[in-house]
Image (cartoon, rainbow, N blue to C red; front, side, top):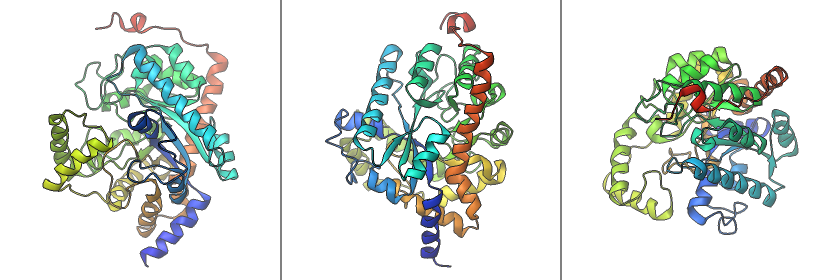
Length: 400
Protein backbone atom coordinates (compact mmCIF):
# COMPACT_ATOMS: atom_id res chain seq x y z
CA UNK A 1 0.00 0.00 0.00
CA UNK A 2 1.12 3.57 -0.60
CA UNK A 3 2.78 5.68 2.07
CA UNK A 4 -0.02 8.22 1.59
CA UNK A 5 -2.52 5.55 2.65
CA UNK A 6 -0.63 4.95 5.89
CA UNK A 7 -0.16 8.67 6.48
CA UNK A 8 -3.88 9.34 6.09
CA UNK A 9 -4.63 6.44 8.41
CA UNK A 10 -2.09 7.77 10.93
CA UNK A 11 -3.74 11.19 10.99
CA UNK A 12 -7.17 9.66 11.54
CA UNK A 13 -5.83 7.58 14.44
CA UNK A 14 -4.15 10.59 16.02
CA UNK A 15 -7.40 12.52 15.89
CA UNK A 16 -8.83 9.98 18.35
CA UNK A 17 -5.64 8.93 20.19
CA UNK A 18 -3.25 11.89 20.05
CA UNK A 19 0.38 11.78 21.07
CA UNK A 20 1.35 12.20 24.70
CA UNK A 21 4.93 13.38 24.30
CA UNK A 22 7.08 12.73 27.35
CA UNK A 23 9.65 15.47 26.98
CA UNK A 24 9.91 18.87 25.28
CA UNK A 25 12.50 21.47 26.26
CA UNK A 26 10.68 24.54 24.93
CA UNK A 27 10.87 26.36 28.31
CA UNK A 28 14.69 26.16 28.37
CA UNK A 29 14.90 27.22 24.71
CA UNK A 30 12.79 30.27 25.55
CA UNK A 31 15.15 31.07 28.42
CA UNK A 32 18.29 30.68 26.33
CA UNK A 33 17.07 32.40 23.17
CA UNK A 34 14.98 35.33 24.40
CA UNK A 35 15.13 35.43 28.20
CA UNK A 36 11.49 34.32 28.39
CA UNK A 37 10.26 37.18 26.17
CA UNK A 38 7.21 35.39 24.76
CA UNK A 39 6.47 38.22 22.34
CA UNK A 40 9.81 37.48 20.69
CA UNK A 41 8.90 33.78 20.37
CA UNK A 42 5.12 33.75 19.94
CA UNK A 43 4.27 30.05 19.70
CA UNK A 44 0.81 30.89 18.33
CA UNK A 45 2.67 31.51 15.06
CA UNK A 46 5.15 29.48 13.03
CA UNK A 47 8.55 29.49 14.76
CA UNK A 48 10.34 27.33 12.19
CA UNK A 49 14.03 28.09 12.04
CA UNK A 50 14.30 29.07 15.70
CA UNK A 51 12.22 26.47 17.56
CA UNK A 52 11.05 22.92 16.94
CA UNK A 53 7.77 23.70 18.68
CA UNK A 54 4.78 25.98 18.18
CA UNK A 55 1.04 25.51 18.44
CA UNK A 56 0.33 25.16 14.68
CA UNK A 57 2.94 22.41 14.39
CA UNK A 58 1.77 20.67 17.58
CA UNK A 59 -1.70 20.60 16.00
CA UNK A 60 -0.31 19.30 12.70
CA UNK A 61 1.61 16.61 14.60
CA UNK A 62 -1.43 15.30 16.41
CA UNK A 63 -0.08 16.13 19.86
CA UNK A 64 -2.76 15.90 22.55
CA UNK A 65 -0.63 16.13 25.68
CA UNK A 66 2.83 17.47 26.34
CA UNK A 67 5.10 17.09 29.32
CA UNK A 68 6.97 20.40 29.23
CA UNK A 69 10.43 19.91 30.69
CA UNK A 70 11.27 22.42 33.41
CA UNK A 71 14.93 21.51 32.97
CA UNK A 72 17.85 23.48 34.37
CA UNK A 73 21.48 22.90 33.52
CA UNK A 74 23.67 21.08 36.03
CA UNK A 75 25.96 24.11 35.85
CA UNK A 76 23.34 25.61 38.16
CA UNK A 77 23.60 24.16 41.66
CA UNK A 78 22.07 24.62 45.09
CA UNK A 79 19.52 27.40 45.44
CA UNK A 80 20.41 28.70 41.97
CA UNK A 81 19.10 25.44 40.49
CA UNK A 82 15.91 25.69 42.54
CA UNK A 83 15.32 29.31 41.48
CA UNK A 84 15.88 28.49 37.81
CA UNK A 85 13.44 25.59 38.08
CA UNK A 86 10.83 27.97 39.51
CA UNK A 87 11.44 30.32 36.57
CA UNK A 88 10.87 27.42 34.20
CA UNK A 89 7.58 26.57 35.96
CA UNK A 90 6.63 30.24 35.75
CA UNK A 91 7.11 30.41 31.97
CA UNK A 92 4.96 27.31 31.46
CA UNK A 93 2.23 29.03 33.46
CA UNK A 94 2.63 32.11 31.27
CA UNK A 95 2.32 30.01 28.12
CA UNK A 96 -0.92 28.52 29.42
CA UNK A 97 -2.30 31.95 30.28
CA UNK A 98 -1.44 33.29 26.81
CA UNK A 99 -2.90 30.37 24.85
CA UNK A 100 -6.02 29.13 26.72
CA UNK A 101 -7.82 28.03 23.54
CA UNK A 102 -5.01 25.58 22.72
CA UNK A 103 -3.27 24.62 25.97
CA UNK A 104 -4.89 23.28 29.15
CA UNK A 105 -3.13 22.86 32.48
CA UNK A 106 -3.17 19.19 33.48
CA UNK A 107 -2.30 17.76 36.87
CA UNK A 108 -4.04 14.38 36.65
CA UNK A 109 -4.97 11.67 34.19
CA UNK A 110 -8.55 12.95 34.33
CA UNK A 111 -7.30 16.41 33.35
CA UNK A 112 -5.58 14.86 30.34
CA UNK A 113 -8.82 13.23 29.24
CA UNK A 114 -10.75 16.47 29.75
CA UNK A 115 -8.26 18.36 27.58
CA UNK A 116 -8.61 15.75 24.84
CA UNK A 117 -12.42 16.05 25.00
CA UNK A 118 -12.13 19.84 24.71
CA UNK A 119 -9.73 19.65 21.78
CA UNK A 120 -6.95 21.28 23.77
CA UNK A 121 -3.38 20.13 24.42
CA UNK A 122 -2.97 18.87 27.97
CA UNK A 123 0.08 20.57 29.45
CA UNK A 124 1.99 18.85 32.23
CA UNK A 125 5.46 19.51 33.63
CA UNK A 126 8.47 17.33 34.34
CA UNK A 127 11.59 18.46 36.22
CA UNK A 128 14.74 17.21 34.51
CA UNK A 129 17.47 16.48 37.01
CA UNK A 130 17.36 15.79 40.74
CA UNK A 131 19.72 18.73 41.35
CA UNK A 132 16.52 20.80 41.00
CA UNK A 133 15.51 19.91 44.57
CA UNK A 134 18.88 20.73 46.18
CA UNK A 135 18.76 17.58 48.35
CA UNK A 136 15.49 18.68 49.95
CA UNK A 137 12.36 16.54 50.17
CA UNK A 138 10.42 19.68 51.11
CA UNK A 139 11.49 21.26 47.83
CA UNK A 140 10.43 18.08 46.03
CA UNK A 141 6.96 18.39 47.54
CA UNK A 142 6.83 22.09 46.68
CA UNK A 143 7.54 21.32 43.02
CA UNK A 144 4.70 18.80 43.07
CA UNK A 145 2.37 21.41 44.58
CA UNK A 146 3.34 23.75 41.72
CA UNK A 147 2.31 21.13 39.19
CA UNK A 148 5.44 19.10 38.42
CA UNK A 149 4.33 15.52 37.72
CA UNK A 150 7.64 13.78 37.09
CA UNK A 151 11.26 14.26 38.04
CA UNK A 152 14.22 12.82 36.17
CA UNK A 153 16.51 11.64 38.96
CA UNK A 154 19.66 12.96 37.25
CA UNK A 155 20.62 14.86 34.15
CA UNK A 156 24.05 14.43 32.54
CA UNK A 157 25.90 14.65 35.86
CA UNK A 158 25.52 12.69 39.09
CA UNK A 159 23.52 14.13 41.93
CA UNK A 160 24.67 13.63 45.51
CA UNK A 161 22.29 10.67 45.73
CA UNK A 162 22.07 9.10 42.24
CA UNK A 163 24.43 8.12 39.44
CA UNK A 164 23.94 9.50 35.94
CA UNK A 165 24.37 7.51 32.73
CA UNK A 166 26.98 9.98 31.47
CA UNK A 167 29.11 10.61 34.56
CA UNK A 168 31.65 8.48 36.44
CA UNK A 169 29.91 6.17 38.94
CA UNK A 170 29.99 7.48 42.49
CA UNK A 171 27.10 6.00 44.45
CA UNK A 172 26.74 2.68 42.63
CA UNK A 173 23.14 3.59 41.76
CA UNK A 174 20.96 5.20 44.44
CA UNK A 175 22.15 6.12 47.93
CA UNK A 176 19.79 5.61 50.87
CA UNK A 177 18.65 9.22 50.49
CA UNK A 178 18.05 8.51 46.80
CA UNK A 179 15.81 5.63 47.78
CA UNK A 180 13.95 7.98 50.13
CA UNK A 181 13.46 10.41 47.22
CA UNK A 182 11.85 7.61 45.21
CA UNK A 183 9.64 6.61 48.15
CA UNK A 184 8.50 10.21 48.67
CA UNK A 185 7.79 10.61 44.96
CA UNK A 186 5.59 7.51 45.18
CA UNK A 187 3.82 8.95 48.22
CA UNK A 188 2.95 12.30 46.59
CA UNK A 189 2.18 10.91 43.13
CA UNK A 190 5.17 12.27 41.22
CA UNK A 191 6.39 9.90 38.51
CA UNK A 192 9.96 8.66 38.86
CA UNK A 193 11.69 9.35 35.53
CA UNK A 194 14.70 7.14 34.79
CA UNK A 195 15.93 8.79 31.59
CA UNK A 196 19.52 10.05 31.98
CA UNK A 197 20.30 7.76 34.94
CA UNK A 198 22.88 4.98 35.05
CA UNK A 199 21.65 1.43 34.60
CA UNK A 200 22.51 0.77 38.26
CA UNK A 201 20.24 3.66 39.24
CA UNK A 202 17.48 2.30 36.99
CA UNK A 203 17.63 -1.08 38.71
CA UNK A 204 17.77 0.43 42.20
CA UNK A 205 14.79 2.70 41.52
CA UNK A 206 12.74 -0.16 40.08
CA UNK A 207 13.53 -2.24 43.17
CA UNK A 208 12.29 0.55 45.47
CA UNK A 209 9.36 2.06 43.59
CA UNK A 210 5.90 0.72 44.33
CA UNK A 211 4.41 2.97 41.63
CA UNK A 212 5.00 2.74 37.88
CA UNK A 213 8.06 4.64 36.63
CA UNK A 214 8.73 6.21 33.26
CA UNK A 215 11.59 6.84 30.91
CA UNK A 216 10.49 10.19 29.49
CA UNK A 217 12.95 10.17 26.56
CA UNK A 218 15.11 7.04 26.18
CA UNK A 219 15.40 4.38 23.50
CA UNK A 220 16.70 0.79 23.31
CA UNK A 221 20.31 0.08 24.22
CA UNK A 222 20.26 -3.20 22.28
CA UNK A 223 19.60 -1.23 19.08
CA UNK A 224 22.08 1.59 19.81
CA UNK A 225 24.64 0.97 22.53
CA UNK A 226 24.56 4.36 24.22
CA UNK A 227 24.38 4.71 28.03
CA UNK A 228 21.35 7.01 27.69
CA UNK A 229 19.31 4.06 26.44
CA UNK A 230 17.52 1.30 28.34
CA UNK A 231 19.10 -2.19 28.57
CA UNK A 232 16.85 -5.15 27.81
CA UNK A 233 16.94 -6.48 31.38
CA UNK A 234 15.62 -3.13 32.63
CA UNK A 235 12.90 -3.13 29.97
CA UNK A 236 11.81 -6.53 31.26
CA UNK A 237 11.71 -5.18 34.82
CA UNK A 238 9.56 -2.31 33.58
CA UNK A 239 6.77 -4.69 32.58
CA UNK A 240 6.45 -5.99 36.14
CA UNK A 241 6.56 -2.42 37.46
CA UNK A 242 3.79 -1.25 35.11
CA UNK A 243 5.83 1.66 33.76
CA UNK A 244 6.38 3.15 30.33
CA UNK A 245 9.56 3.71 28.27
CA UNK A 246 9.13 6.61 25.83
CA UNK A 247 11.42 6.38 22.80
CA UNK A 248 13.42 9.48 22.00
CA UNK A 249 14.45 10.92 18.63
CA UNK A 250 17.97 12.25 19.41
CA UNK A 251 20.21 10.83 16.64
CA UNK A 252 23.26 10.26 18.85
CA UNK A 253 21.10 8.05 21.09
CA UNK A 254 19.37 6.08 18.34
CA UNK A 255 21.84 5.70 15.44
CA UNK A 256 25.16 3.94 16.11
CA UNK A 257 26.89 5.77 13.24
CA UNK A 258 25.92 9.11 14.78
CA UNK A 259 27.70 8.46 18.06
CA UNK A 260 31.27 9.07 16.84
CA UNK A 261 30.18 11.97 14.65
CA UNK A 262 28.52 13.63 17.63
CA UNK A 263 31.64 13.30 19.77
CA UNK A 264 33.58 15.17 17.08
CA UNK A 265 30.84 17.80 16.72
CA UNK A 266 30.81 18.31 20.49
CA UNK A 267 34.59 18.80 20.50
CA UNK A 268 34.19 21.40 17.77
CA UNK A 269 31.62 23.29 19.86
CA UNK A 270 33.94 23.35 22.87
CA UNK A 271 36.80 24.57 20.67
CA UNK A 272 34.57 27.51 19.74
CA UNK A 273 33.91 28.25 23.40
CA UNK A 274 30.34 26.90 23.31
CA UNK A 275 28.52 24.27 25.34
CA UNK A 276 27.82 21.18 23.26
CA UNK A 277 24.08 21.36 24.10
CA UNK A 278 23.77 25.01 23.00
CA UNK A 279 21.01 25.37 20.37
CA UNK A 280 20.98 29.16 20.02
CA UNK A 281 21.20 30.49 16.43
CA UNK A 282 24.90 31.36 16.83
CA UNK A 283 25.68 27.84 18.07
CA UNK A 284 23.70 26.28 15.26
CA UNK A 285 25.78 28.24 12.73
CA UNK A 286 28.90 26.65 14.24
CA UNK A 287 27.22 23.24 13.92
CA UNK A 288 26.25 23.97 10.29
CA UNK A 289 29.82 24.94 9.36
CA UNK A 290 31.12 21.70 10.90
CA UNK A 291 28.48 19.63 9.16
CA UNK A 292 29.34 21.18 5.77
CA UNK A 293 32.82 19.69 6.07
CA UNK A 294 31.85 16.54 7.98
CA UNK A 295 28.45 15.28 6.74
CA UNK A 296 26.23 13.97 9.52
CA UNK A 297 25.03 10.33 9.37
CA UNK A 298 21.25 10.74 9.04
CA UNK A 299 18.81 9.07 11.36
CA UNK A 300 15.36 8.58 9.83
CA UNK A 301 11.80 7.78 10.83
CA UNK A 302 12.70 4.12 10.27
CA UNK A 303 15.50 4.42 12.85
CA UNK A 304 12.99 5.37 15.55
CA UNK A 305 10.59 2.67 14.41
CA UNK A 306 13.40 0.11 14.80
CA UNK A 307 13.73 1.10 18.47
CA UNK A 308 10.00 0.94 19.03
CA UNK A 309 9.81 -2.47 17.36
CA UNK A 310 12.51 -3.77 19.68
CA UNK A 311 11.01 -2.19 22.79
CA UNK A 312 7.60 -3.65 21.97
CA UNK A 313 9.15 -7.10 21.51
CA UNK A 314 10.99 -6.98 24.84
CA UNK A 315 8.57 -5.19 27.18
CA UNK A 316 5.24 -5.36 25.36
CA UNK A 317 3.05 -2.75 23.72
CA UNK A 318 1.47 -1.73 27.06
CA UNK A 319 4.77 -0.25 28.27
CA UNK A 320 6.03 2.02 25.48
CA UNK A 321 5.48 5.62 24.46
CA UNK A 322 7.12 8.60 22.73
CA UNK A 323 9.37 11.36 24.10
CA UNK A 324 10.86 13.32 21.24
CA UNK A 325 13.16 15.75 23.16
CA UNK A 326 12.24 18.60 20.83
CA UNK A 327 13.97 21.91 21.51
CA UNK A 328 16.47 20.01 23.65
CA UNK A 329 18.70 18.73 20.86
CA UNK A 330 20.49 20.31 17.93
CA UNK A 331 19.72 17.51 15.47
CA UNK A 332 16.73 15.31 14.67
CA UNK A 333 15.94 12.47 12.28
CA UNK A 334 14.86 13.08 8.72
CA UNK A 335 11.08 13.31 8.69
CA UNK A 336 10.95 14.18 12.39
CA UNK A 337 12.54 17.61 12.23
CA UNK A 338 9.89 19.24 14.42
CA UNK A 339 6.73 18.42 16.38
CA UNK A 340 4.64 18.16 13.21
CA UNK A 341 6.39 14.90 12.28
CA UNK A 342 4.62 12.39 14.52
CA UNK A 343 2.15 11.23 11.81
CA UNK A 344 5.10 10.07 9.70
CA UNK A 345 6.34 7.88 12.55
CA UNK A 346 2.88 6.44 13.09
CA UNK A 347 2.55 5.79 9.35
CA UNK A 348 5.85 3.88 9.42
CA UNK A 349 4.64 1.72 12.30
CA UNK A 350 1.34 1.04 10.52
CA UNK A 351 3.27 -0.02 7.43
CA UNK A 352 5.18 -2.46 9.64
CA UNK A 353 1.95 -4.07 10.77
CA UNK A 354 1.20 -2.29 14.04
CA UNK A 355 -2.53 -2.41 14.75
CA UNK A 356 -4.78 0.53 15.51
CA UNK A 357 -4.96 -0.72 19.12
CA UNK A 358 -1.15 -0.85 19.34
CA UNK A 359 -0.91 2.75 18.12
CA UNK A 360 -3.57 3.96 20.57
CA UNK A 361 -1.59 2.47 23.45
CA UNK A 362 1.70 3.93 22.20
CA UNK A 363 0.41 7.45 21.65
CA UNK A 364 -2.17 8.07 24.38
CA UNK A 365 -3.38 5.22 26.54
CA UNK A 366 -0.14 4.03 28.15
CA UNK A 367 0.95 7.47 29.34
CA UNK A 368 -2.49 8.30 30.75
CA UNK A 369 -2.67 4.93 32.47
CA UNK A 370 0.76 5.25 34.11
CA UNK A 371 -0.13 8.62 35.61
CA UNK A 372 -3.48 7.30 36.80
CA UNK A 373 -1.79 4.29 38.42
CA UNK A 374 0.75 6.55 40.18
CA UNK A 375 -2.13 8.64 41.50
CA UNK A 376 -3.79 5.52 42.92
CA UNK A 377 -0.58 4.48 44.67
CA UNK A 378 -0.24 7.97 46.14
CA UNK A 379 -3.79 7.94 47.48
CA UNK A 380 -3.06 4.69 49.30
CA UNK A 381 0.35 5.72 50.64
CA UNK A 382 -0.70 9.19 51.76
CA UNK A 383 -3.36 7.70 54.03
CA UNK A 384 -0.76 5.57 55.80
CA UNK A 385 2.37 7.72 55.63
CA UNK A 386 3.14 11.34 56.41
CA UNK A 387 5.73 13.49 54.64
CA UNK A 388 9.34 12.42 55.03
CA UNK A 389 11.63 15.03 56.59
CA UNK A 390 14.78 12.94 56.30
CA UNK A 391 17.92 14.78 55.24
CA UNK A 392 20.72 13.52 53.06
CA UNK A 393 23.15 13.91 55.97
CA UNK A 394 20.96 11.75 58.21
CA UNK A 395 20.70 8.94 55.66
CA UNK A 396 24.00 9.13 53.78
CA UNK A 397 26.34 10.92 56.18
CA UNK A 398 28.33 14.10 55.47
CA UNK A 399 28.39 15.14 51.81
CA UNK A 400 31.62 14.34 50.01
